[in-house]
Image (cartoon, rainbow, N blue to C red; front, side):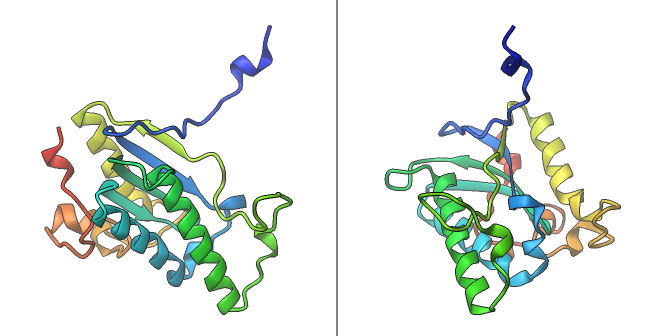
Amino acid sequence: MDKNLFTARRKSFIETGKIYFWTATMNKWMRLFENNSFKIPVLDSLSYLSRMAKIDVFGFVIMPNHIHLIWRMNALNGKESAHGSFLKYTAHQFKKLMQKEKMNMHPYLVNASNKQYEFWQKDSLAVELYSREVAFQKLDYIHNNPLAAHWNLVTHPCDYEYSSASFYELGENKHTFLKDLRFEF
């Protein structure tokens, strides 16, 4: 029997036009996002890809070592997928920031022919959101992630600046790339 048959694999393929809950994790679970300056490239990339109509972002949270998004890919970004462009752009920006701030880049060093550093793990998770119920379950999970006992970043979801919680609960539009998931199902 093929033992690979039972090996768990994360699905990272995303079909254009469908809405997904997507998780990307920092390589080796490093807590790069504890430094807020590393969250800016994530927001910038989401904003740019949204403005260019490559993606629609319905929810997000940037945690110390991973991000969760609810998004839809609308079109390729040149020859590559929009989520591939997102990962590549943010990785380049992380490298520049680390060099500028003279941070230790050794934990991200890889022995690869096409790159010297790897900031994102290769196994991003994509789960298609096939119903309103599942979509809002994931949105609640995203918004409550900063309150989890092992993170304890804030006491209320709306208090976490790097999340879409205040968009949904208070109607605040601090992140102009956000679209309302309630109009999708």
